[in-house]
Image (cartoon, rainbow, N blue to C red; front, side, top):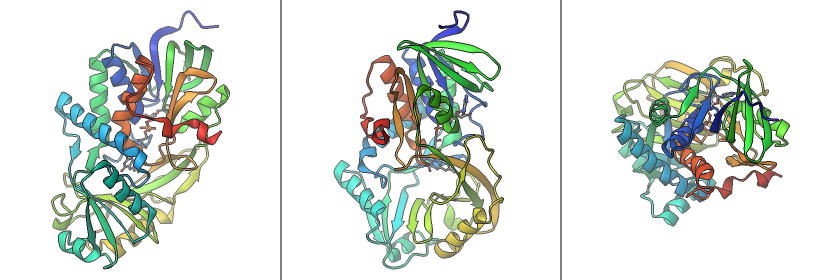
Length: 382
Ligand SMILES: Cc1cc2nc3c(=O)[nH]c(=O)nc-3n(C[C@H](O)[C@H](O)[C@H](O)COP(=O)(O)OP(=O)(O)OC[C@H]3O[C@@H](n4cnc5c(N)ncnc54)[C@H](O)[C@@H]3O)c2cc1C
């Protein structure tokens, strides 16, 4: 039975990070009475959204089906910049780099052709001439997206938070949700670690690593695992400024790496996308340097491809929530159509947060989203 003393809202959101803060903003803007609950005080460095920058690519190596979502997201990031007066995006361009025959590169090209996106293709020698810091083999292929670039992720969450609150959303920080109680198709309650209760007609669960634990009692067995990753900033040189060095995604025999030009004097930032260490559901994250590969992998990559990079400035550990096919899960809980879930972003979700937040809000307020999200159904694993 619902607790009649629980505070009541139209919608509750568990996890006001990348996806949740954006959904909260769009719901509040639509006049929905929404409460966002977060275990921390977002933006913060204990989820998946710290480290100051994220790449946004449009010609999508992970699948052309993502392109409409990426383009909608880009338009919404621009809108958010304008509404808050906060610079959130730098058009650095993004170079997708690999050897001929790489599936990722083929899909980048296919996406660009299918959706008419700007894409320039260079070989290794041409790329070196244009961006002197890169050392590539002649046979390397570079698919360069001039309109893609870098988002300031923590700033973007801050901007969503500002607008969400301005439009009347409520935000409860340092509130860890430990239980969800579903009463009917239009009544759900959540309980926090401190015993507070909140009730609403609809719920969005986008609580990163906690999502599978919260939804298991409702019969949703999410195939999402935690994987620890590392990334770091290195001493820079003039060749690493955004005018001479684009964002990049490299697929190589040694692994998949991504990186950013030196923005605001922070240094050259590089991370490894594949690899990493599985982490148990409730375990803490070992700090950067706890694994020899944290720095070793990045240094090996730099020695081969960007030999002018300087010494390590600072490193960080972070985590991905990974699905078996590395595609997202955005759906409702099968037994509870008023409980929405957005998880399994597998290390490439941030760029879409503006559009995913809008789509989740539209599903609740209008019953359907403008962008097709059927590609991300939970049903593909059941
Ligand atoms: C190192 C690194 C590099 C990346 N690079 C890119 C990139 O270049 N481009 C890109 O598009 N994506 C990138 N990603 C992926 C992207 O950052 C994530 O996919 C995205 O941030 C996930 O958003 P989220 O809302 O699921 O998680 P988060 O932003 O972490 O939000 C989850 C929120 O839930 C809260 N929470 C957790 N449990 C509870 C609970 N029980 N109760 C209440 N609140 C709770 C947390 O405090 C957190 O604020 C990268 C990720 C990492 C780690």
